[in-house]
Amino acid sequence: MNTTATDAEDQADMARLVEGREGALNDLMRRHGERLFHYLIRVLQDESEAEDLAQEAFARVFLNRAKFKADKKFSTWLYAIATNLARDQLRRRSRHPSVSIEATEEHESGLKNILPADGPNPAENLDLAERAAAVRRALAELPEELRVPLILAEYEEQSHGEIAVVLDCSPKAVEMRIYRARQQLRNRLSPLLLQVE
View 1: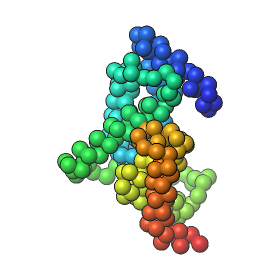
View 2: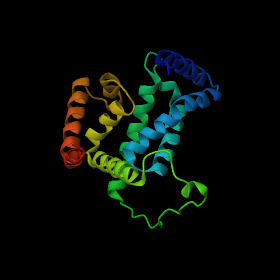
View 3: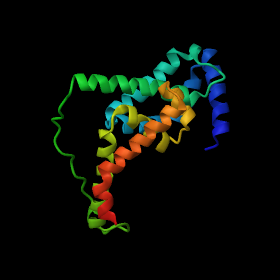
């Protein structure tokens, strides 16, 4: 995706939104909604909460449209809103923990479960799934102050400057947090890395 073109479209849509043309919000949601949703899943580790907060983030964009500074990047502003919402949700969650009482997922039936797959065999799939789960767990166990900048850098491909705006800190602080996050991940995943060698 051409970020310069996207930035220009975002600026135009925000100008339209400020003028009262609400359809511009749909264009912003179309361009940024899915990516924001995936970011929130990584931060919150909960798909339902991520969906709710992604919608809430766009509601906040609408409500605060007059506060948007036209010389700033829209996506950075959007991620700052979403990050603050996620931070609040994580605080609520820590004060009011919940336990899921849902049963295991239902298994689908049909030919796709009987026919052989073209990809990796079941043992390889299991190994890949275990490693991916270990990485997700290790990422979820990082403190929020380290997890969020790492996710923004690695998954959302934001620069240290953009992350600094989102987190309201200096680019050097972002760099240090990402470094510490990677160190902690490396330490937590070292047994898994040794198995690969």
